[in-house]
Amino acid sequence: MSTNQATVQKPEIVNGIEVDKVMSIINNINTDANNGKWQFRSTNQWTGATRNQSVFKDYFANDGENFTHPNPFVVEADEPFLLGGTSNAANPVEYLLHALTSCLTTSLVAHAAVRGITVEDIKTSTEGEIDVRGFLGISKDVRKGFQAIRINMKVKSEATAKQLKELALFSPVYDTVSNSLPVDLIIEKY
Amino acid sequence: MSTNQATVQKPEIVNGIEVDKVMSIINNINTDANNGKWQFRSTNQWTGATRNQSVFKDYFANDGENFTHPNPFVVEADEPFLLGGTSNAANPVEYLLHALTSCLTTSLVAHAAVRGITVEDIKTSTEGEIDVRGFLGISKDVRKGFQAIRINMKVKSEATAKQLKELALFSPVYDTVSNSLPVDLIIEKY
Picture 1 (tube, one colour):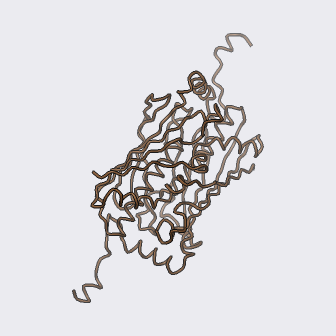
Picture 2 (spheres, chains in turn purple, cyan):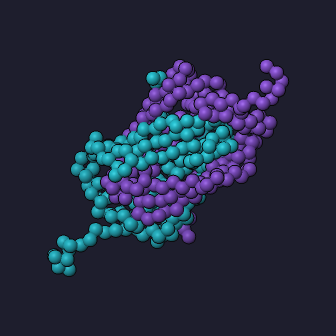
Picture 3 (spheres, helix red, strand yellow):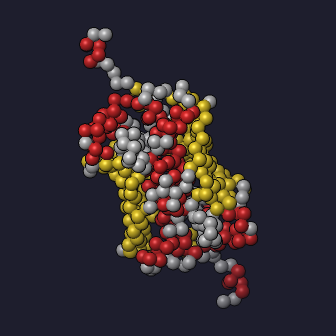
């Protein structure tokens, strides 16, 4: 291969992901570990009854550098009719299942890409069991949250199921839920 | 008040929520504790690169009774450009912040409603700190998930901040994240 051919080489794309882009983030953090400090954030407005709306406008990367999303992402929440809601959007526990499943999927695909492992398809079923006696305050002995979450991913790939699971388990949401994170809640009146 | 007036009484609505509806769920579970066993679920399809889509079609309540949403809720996920994504939707960790914040909001409003406590407004700011060295596999000593989540709710209500916090803390997502839930992940090749 001539030098000229090497210099006009296209970025390597694996699983649709430009591996060069991901490697440049990694190199940036290898240069200065503080560049790994990121912050995601939202604002949320109650919109009446069981409805509310979150807006994601920007985030910090590289220890405080502000990055603005091309358009703010607006995400609605509601509750089903059965829970006294208006059933216009998924409810909060459904969004938790989405956060978990989508994070495992993206983690698997991206970590496969940087290792040159091809993934052709991923289809996932997710189930969360909850005893609503906890949430409704009927029983103090029943936990308020999910009692079990089962995620079943079907993956078409050259890698083994064991390798694929190792890649998926880089997921930040999986870690946050599985290993707990005390959430700091402050309520102020205005 | 005449008997006639009492029988044509409208359902009591507090904070936009029909309290009768919520009370009927509670009564239904008080009749048989098994009616508290619910299941929420999704399917997810990877749609290329850093994108995927969850669909919420139905759920179980009352120990296996199937309830279908009026329309399936479709929720997209993507990653920002900086993480090698196409920035078409919020990313999984942002959806986790939405799940937490929306759940605290709805829990506060609904539990206030059944207690006859009026809430006029709720505005929330949420921040999640993450050191992406964990997710990217740069350091094994750094946790992959959030290291801290701060949620600041500003509430206009007749109740005290302490009372309002007690109501918000019925939140299932807050409990799931704060107190950990081992997630059962199965990966199968197909």
